[in-house]
Image (cartoon, rainbow, N blue to C red; front, side):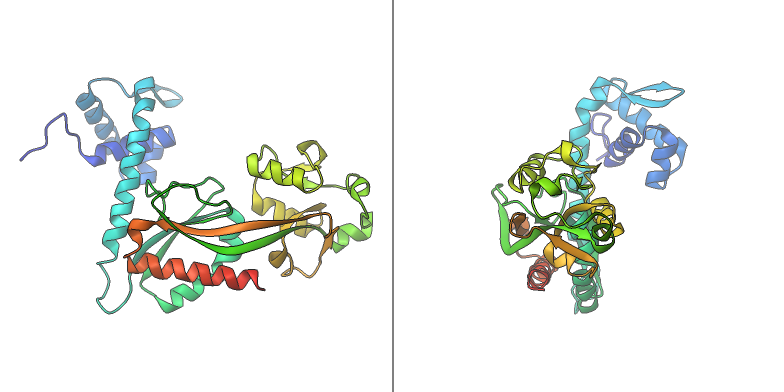
Length: 302
């Protein structure tokens, strides 16, 4: 049975989505590893199939029409579903006697860069045919839409159809580098703290803003450096820029970081490992889920 014009193939939507994301045929071609003429043909074919223009061509690139933007969420869903399908299929590509396949994990920047490397290294050593995709973002990936297989979250999951495991709490405290404190002194109360160079959020989100308020009423206006990038905050803290928040077990790894006002500034971050309940029977996801739970619990006890 041949494909009709009203039933365009996935490759057309993939090229359409790449042009949407990249803004030009050439950039989309590089992203997909295809040629620019191929991407152009795909866009033309999809426009012919749907019966309207998807982009306005200009010297500044390809600008999506209103109609194209209305199709974007559906193309994103196709891309997510296709990626999930390939991850599921990957489990059958390895040798029969070894666990194999691809697992996509999502976590915040600081968790992915600072906490997960030793956990994933041990997992790799135990299961060398297992492939990990690590998506680092403070955005909550939608597990129900299969944007990821497993998520590490600092908020209790509220969606149904998820397999969740609370692994414990990570304490958050206020820290300063010894070099900074030697230059500026150690604050003894809130009033003195507000005279220091504080590192905090820029736009933030509801959680970071409420957490800052809970930790002494700090607000955006109090911060001498503002960024929503967790790793940047951590790097600035380690460089001696000023005083900022850090996970207590993580701060212990840097001997030069000194905790400030521990009685006044402490917060427990509930930590969860989450995956879609349909993946319960997936050996590759189950072993990864268990490794994350065990590794994070060990980190919390460090």
